[in-house]
Amino acid sequence: QVQLQESGPGLVKPSGTLSLTCAVSGVSISSSNWWAWVRQPPGKGLEWIGEIFQTGSTNYNPSLKSRVTISLDKSKNQFSLTLRSVTAADTAFYYCAQAPDTRAWRLDYWGQGTLVTVSS
Amino acid sequence: DIQMTQSPSSLSASVGDRVTITCRASQSISTYLNWYQQKPGQAPKLLIYEASSLQSGVPSRFSGSGSGTDFTLTISSLQPEDFATYYCQQSYYTLPITFGQGTRLEIE
Image (tube, rainbow over all chains, first blue to last red; front, side, top):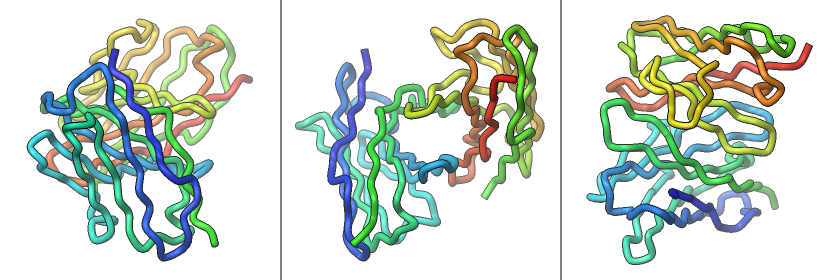
């Protein structure tokens, strides 16, 4: 079955760069799915960060677009998130997820999430 | 951005109760509305997509309805495992994808 697993540093310094990877198993990252990142500050709601398709096409949340890059690594069947110039406001649980490439877009498989804390 | 507003923000109910959660969009989104359930320490789980389609494996006591700007999630008979936070999410044509603020369902 489809499984996603986030990995990366749990602590990032202010003004630094947050880098996370999502390893995908059970489905090829070259399949007709969008690969998304969503974050959730502790005790708060969900925020869509952005997504990437197997062609490399991306969509980003305008509120984060200037600081975000999402990329694919087809050889490793994984995709990545880079968030630059982080502040304490970027402290959150970060989830990777899959969305089928249909008009009825929805996140049907999720990773377990990883907490990233921005602190010196 | 399309704003999604859920009501209530929290509610208390008992096992066996029928519960309805409402989600309102700031503009018409047709039926491009999904519902998720999130339990503490877990990732969200897709329950309903396209306003009323039940995700595979989700119990039939969950149902969704609505179109345009007003949507509802109904749990016909609450089970102990249903106490969680519920989020709506729109996927209309304009980015960004946005979520409601969540509805926390607690045991009465």
